[in-house]
Amino acid sequence: MDDKTLIRISKRLSLHLRHAPEKIGITLDPAGWVRIDTLLAALAAHGRRISRADLDHVVAGNDKQRFIIDGDRIRANQGHSVAVELDLPATEPPAVLYHGTVARFLDAIQREGLRPMARHDVHLSATVETAQRVGARRGKPVVLQVDAAAMHRDGHVFRVSANGVWLTSTVPPPYLTTDESPPAAR
Ligand code: HQG
Image (cartoon, rainbow, N blue to C red; front, top):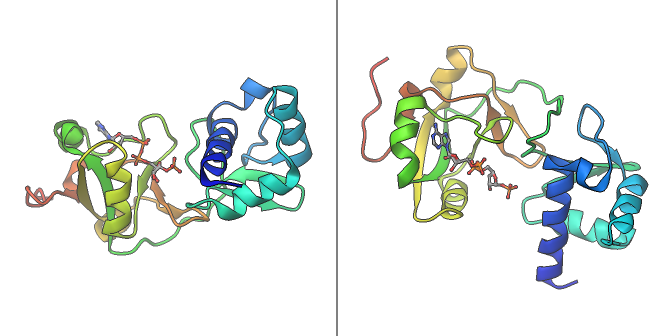
């Protein structure tokens, strides 16, 4: 399979396993799982036939390990906009996490903090490099530093997805630093 096909199928899986299962008439269980044969039949019924071998290939070859297969079922590891309960345990975060964004969002972020926007959670990265890649999807990346140790101490809950994305509900402004601004007083 060439990279373009892999990305196209991965995007289709993201669409249906994170955002719009109803578009192909499937329902995710409360934890986001769907039976693989149900998914493949629904895709085929909507003119998007893919083989089980190709599905396995896309899941295994996905650059961010966005999906996981467990027995006869599959789900997206994170990134949902539909309501799912991923049942990830609360986990102590590293002292510092990073969020990649772009300059045009900074005023709002400094005012409101990081919000999940269309997703369930705010997505944070363990490394500056990953955050730069996330921000670069939208333009010249700006990396914000998150004082995760202080958030954890103050009772904010963190979870880490199976593919290493750190998730939390919101990051209030006092925990955020940009290169340009010193941390706000707490
Ligand atoms: C911004 C991709 C204004 C936030 C990536 C971001 C990641 C605010 C955008 C994953 C704001 C939301 C998630 C506020 C946050 N005011 N803008 N108060 N708070 N924002 O895509 O973190 O390919 O939902 O900075 O690699 O960019 O989907 O989140 O720019 O891991 O697997 O609002 O998505 O992974 O955008 O990316 P997103 P994200 P996948």
